[in-house]
Image (cartoon, rainbow, N blue to C red; front, side):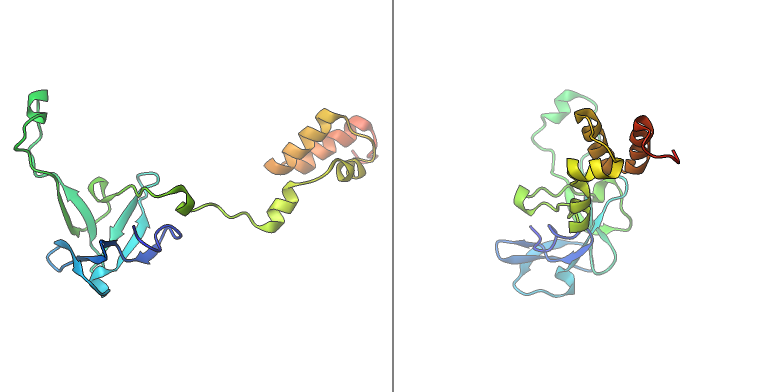
Length: 174
């Protein structure tokens, strides 16, 4: 698992396996034999535009890691059970982001990126009944309070507030 991949969607990261770093050679072959990090062991994780929650890993030579199917397309179910079928070939020589070069990264829930809500937004989302009643200028019923709180979260608070004021005939300009 990439150390920096779980925090940034577009991040330079090093992939390591059993204390060895994954490297991509000039020819596009992948190997995990290096003990130290060089530009060949650095990958840029880009979010794939066509596939949701998938990434494409770009090498230092601006190529992408991709999986190529080495088997001819099978036409029957009997061909799928053939034991002589070879696994897909994984190389780092794809020129563009395509279906074969996108990977879905699975990680533990504690490492998943979460949208961080700013403190101001969280404080703005919370509003009490007393503040709402002061804005309207009268006592509010329970359903009006719920509706105004929901409107505040969704973003159409001022329109709903004006509707409640008109209903109570408190605002002379409404």
